[in-house]
Length: 235
Image 1: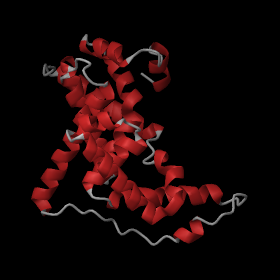
Image 2: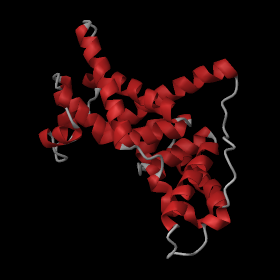
Image 3: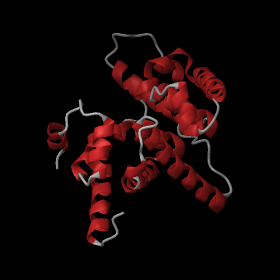
């Protein structure tokens, strides 16, 4: 089923709990709607944690499969996005632990190529290259975010990129709200040291999750669900 068809069948006015009930009742199109509704935000969380586009997609698919298999356990005590975010983080952290065991070190910095920050920040609002410069600057912010320690980076993504509340972030990470505040403050300061005032202009546009990626994740999860049903392994 195409993205537009799913949207027509289930408009944005349908709340998450209604979708969960439909999924629990075996409505696979409802689960596709759930994925498309939360794909971009959850992908950005996975991407910020794992530093790698392909790994983030794989982790997102695994988290969705886990959600599909345990959807009946969701009681609405927290927001659906919070519950899904926990599943994504659990999968990402498990991957990081496996990688640590293999290499004993999780690379925290991707040196990349040198970018002239001063040139990109030139105050020339009428320049035809303005859009291209902003794209480069966003890419720079993503790289700088990748360089933050895990504890700061994940909190920053949840609070500043996904705009979760302090309470929701604390629930996702199982840490005190005061810790969320301090880590978020520290993360913002670290990024601003690298990007000065431009960080605030672009921080909500990190890790774009385009239509092709969205479709690939949805198709991959639905194919695996269908395979489980055909093999009698549906839970």
